[in-house]
Image 1 (spheres, rainbow, N blue to C red):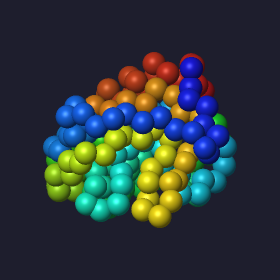
Image 2 (cartoon, rainbow, N blue to C red):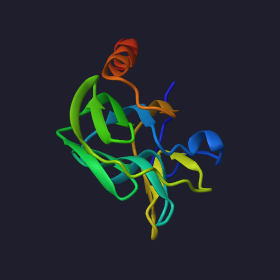
Image 3 (cartoon, one colour):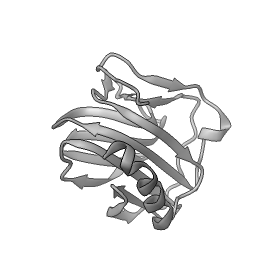
Length: 163
């Protein structure tokens, strides 16, 4: 089962200490990508400053993994189901698409803790909500950075369902 998002719906996970991670994080989900996106939130805890913590985000044919105020970007998304994973280990960010490492950069700023909820299928950008307009399945948040082997294993476990 996937969340069927029509641009007017999303899911919210109320604030809890288990989603207030600061030194290690993985955001993981399967998404259906139907074409170029327009500023759409996939999964994250992201609100106007000072409440920017983490976010998987879609724009044009790009996926971005934000932590605080900067991001790691992958360009080249195509139509269909994709497994998207962003990891942060306290020293850097990595972005994996369909089990493969695609982008990364050094980043050592601890993540912000806020009392805002985690949103699945949108984010609030300050002046408007920004919904994801396709399906999202199996969204997960880990309080540590998954290894490349774990990302590959999770991709392999779902690829026969979504690919």
